[in-house]
Image 1 (cartoon, protein in one colour):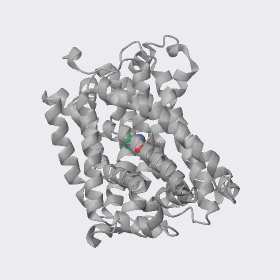
Image 2 (cartoon, rainbow, N blue to C red):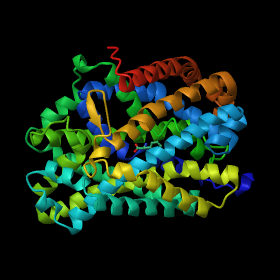
Image 3 (tube, helix red, strand yellow):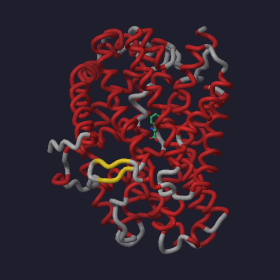
Length: 464
Ligand code: PHE
């Protein structure tokens, strides 16, 4: 069985694929608006701390579990633990399916923006009021349906091709391109009037704005952005060879993820302030702030630069959707011995259907648009799924992983796995820090934040 599973060609392949999974809409779409809604620099700082002291160790834990067991998320927990622990893996697989169902809708928006900027008159029709343009765009059911359908089909085709030819190759090409275009746009944005106001908002912390919700948003963002808590990295880790140095791989993935998020902020906030917009605009932030500069570049340059930006956003999203789809695919291929191709199409269709209410929830149908009311706001169906499965679900998944390693699999075995391909690891200070985080720091923080988030979000209890 072992030799029939796919494999990455080596560390570079794994790093490209895992960084591809990590870098996505979470960095370029979600991170800037979360930062904007949560006060700017203070949020950035807390997010960075969460990433280093909790995110990186949890990532190492996931990759180690996956590489040790050489199985899908469910199979890994069951193999190294038992059937009951397998439920944690199963929960992660469900989170993956639910996250993909709405993620694909937002990816569809980015794809639609790419098409409409390059081939249609977005920069003319939206002129002067990209906020209105965005609102009516996402409320259009057919646009949503078509673009997210195409996106799901693309995802499925890459996943069908398998680990090396599909996932790895796509990521190796797309990731470097993304960096180049981001940096070019930042250089341009920083030259605009008032850009420095944006930089200040982004880099000078105001701690008076920090409360419990800032902290759980930052932690949730760190987990979402690093693709943690649902077994994506267990699955990718299971395609790695024994000789690879896992610490180095995880460090590079984390660094790539943080850099892209950081750069996305450095692009968006100067833009927002230079146009006198509000940083608190929420999920529409990049879709509203960016077209304005593309428009200012003139009709031709605007199309070229704007088109490239949204195309790259699509690429970033694509390397993430393939990892989200790979998690349930790996489960059905490994555990149920089903054919990869059938599984991929079946799951893609299922996820697409689960995503329909999310597609209708940005204005198309009032019932889904104002689906629930909590945290003092109306929440759309998409918001609710995102809160439940990405914010709460991933933190819970991370919490369970730390308990699993601490009480069941044991840190000794994790250290042994992390020493393969990294002989000095067991004696290094890093090992002690990682183990301290996995056994003490992370479970406490993740457990407490999980409880607070659930109480605050869904039961209206306000603790701070
Ligand atoms: N990390 C991805 C992003 O930032 C989203 C994702 C979450 C992908 C969980 C896989 C698993 O866009």
